[in-house]
Length: 283
Image 1 (cartoon, rainbow, N blue to C red):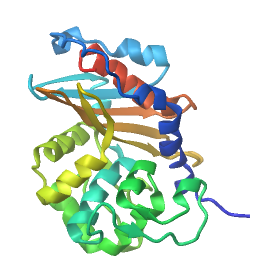
Image 2: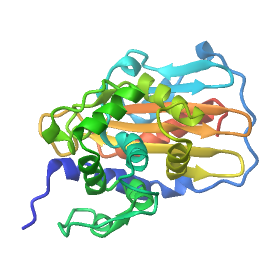
Image 3: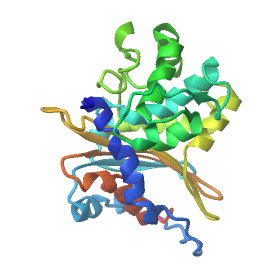
């Protein structure tokens, strides 16, 4: 019988979530919804949380208007484990360090069966990001090495900048050592979108392309999910959906952070984010 690590198990939902809500992410060819003139005081996201019966927070930054919209400000300033949202940063490091020469470079599967069948094969970076393959990113981290990874983390001032001891080089984003607030997630994404990170333009461009979750004539969404603690006893389960929406004349950055205490919470990460963006007239 194959023993499956709890760390591996919780990543199942990063994949199954995408399958479950695929119809919602299908490109829409309808005319764009006109932007709604709003102020932070006029926007109330609470009904969306109530409708989905979910606890958590969301932070949206309107770049052109230079303003934030949010629900649960205190939580938006609380640090949580990065979970699979770290795959954005880890992909940048893989390319910048030369561990992977390009996004189609293949890493060989070790032959150890994982719960998600699509993981059980050789993968390139583009495929691994899309299906959130844990083993692929663990190999990257080990090849980058503890010292170099710490240097990249500090140079980018990512989260709390803690990756633990060398023996945790392939675990620190999975076990809760590396933490980040929703506000810091948005700030990191702003720097990514603007090219203001200690990585080459080539690495930034490739990773931004990897992140495309939905593309229509009216907008492009670049994003990543994350789920910390699934299947672990006594551990608070936290879900993420972070990214940004590019329209013809603006960019909206978002960080959604939810309590994952019910099966419906997996899909709620994207559902809630879309509802809030619709309230602002972005989608």
